[in-house]
Picture 1 (cartoon, helix red, strand yellow):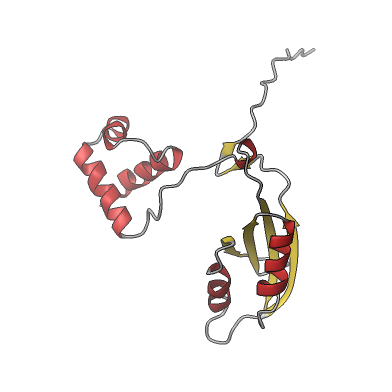
Picture 2 (cartoon, helix red, strand yellow):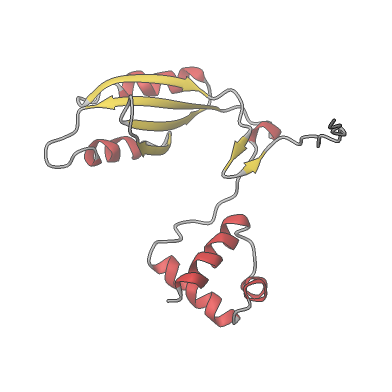
Amino acid sequence: MNEELKRKVLELLKEDARSSTALMATLLGAEEEDVKSVIAQMEQDHVIVKYATVVNWDKVDDERVTALIEVQITPERGRGFEGIAERIYLYPQVKSVYLMSGAYDLLVEVEGRNLREVANFVSEKLSPIDAVLSTKTNFTLKKYKQDGIIFEEHEEDNRLMISP
């Protein structure tokens, strides 16, 4: 598979997953069948995992709470962090789990209907896991940017710069 075409197709899909293969072929100067083939192969190889929409939930009348939870854990012998991460990411409230370097081991993104629901998840599901040493919950107050997309409209700075 042409690695350059693969990378360029991924960049276009990341920018807009609704782009047609005909448009991508035109933009890349490639044959549409080649673009279709590259996409099909990447889907089969699990390079492309899902096509998703980025939503600014602040603009929707839907109350929800997101928290980023820093988790310190003791790795399991023979499996390291994998088994504990899997146990955590299987909960439906968990949106993302990242292995980190630094002061904590896992960063867990959790979503709930309210603060109490997230707090209950931490106290009833996450903290009781034997390997979990500590948790630190940080509630998201506002998202400004996600996946390279700025949520708030901002005014351009049209001031004139005067130099001596």
